[in-house]
Length: 520
Image (cartoon, rainbow, N blue to C red; front, side):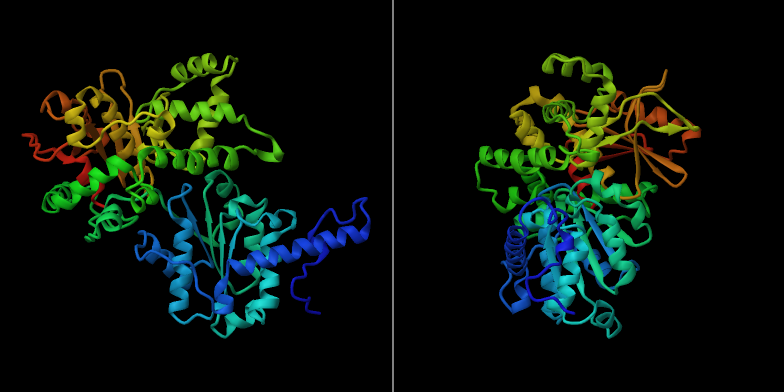
């Protein structure tokens, strides 16, 4: 028998058989039901042909792929991962708007934000419970009948990692019902914990802060075709690809430089460019509270089996990751600094585990040393932040990164060079399927900042973010790597601060950092 509107079965509430009077328990449950359905209806105004929230016309790069995968993808579920505040919820809303504009009936679309409905916390298996209620009271027919008649329901679940055992529920839903699902998550730790049971049932897409071309479009209304197609590696092992990238960067120099200045000044979080007139102090406070502290206190505070992680230690580890961004400091640096700051005997294993936790929030990437001939050098990982403004906000230390700013503050060039390395590392590590590592000094072999492995070939990359380039000394690591035939490196890339660098060695291709970032 169909349940009445606003009624969820009490089996979803595990504590209804506690010692409280039955009537009081039922009254409280009824009040929670009413609040739950009121919240759900307010976040799905299209059920009643009401207006959605106003959406900006700008769409981030994953939108076409996300929309196509939801409508016609090989898997019934699509997963969008990324740090907090990079625009995942806006993308979901834009997908809903596109579905409605295409003629999909509003009653076939369900949107649930799992971090904004506190009444969901007491419901067992909330994904299935909400789906059943939606099927009964909004869709008005079974999911399978709607799908069989080519009118599938679209279920969009935001921040699903906040739920315990989310993956088995999604698996049950897509295995037994003809629905199309789109889910998002901010914590890679919690998302990865459920991916095994979703193997073959979900297509994953990952999104970080704004790319340079996205800043050009969002901030300045300029749109140019990309050279490096999303997730494609064709041509990366060809020197002509990178020479063409440098040439196109020069051709589009005005908008590239303008966008890079904006990126250096405000970073890559969308709000920084939507509200670019806001004072830096306000933006920094916003990033600290909604991105960093939210991840530390919400995504990371609770461990398995309800164990609480040390919030102060998490904050201190993140502080050191910011301090040493673009470097590979390791145990010898982290342990004494943290022991001195927190006045405790905290070991490297625990610190490294917390670094992995931060990597799991996608706030940073830990780039491992290169593995060659099946042997891995015992060297620490290189730390690359998702955005340099997180460092500026957390440490309250602004470092100029554009050429004009560095010309005024040349004493900050070394730090700027490390942050440029961090930028490039996160940019590369965020591309799914691309093998990125760093090459630490090995005996007589000098270090190389990054190594891309494309098939059987390796591309060494060295960042020299300075006004003057020494053609011999600044290419020493690249030349040593290219000259060793066992590494199978046909050429190397020298990433520079400014345009116009030329080298006699044709094996080394100079390209400005802004032109490198401009490729995608």
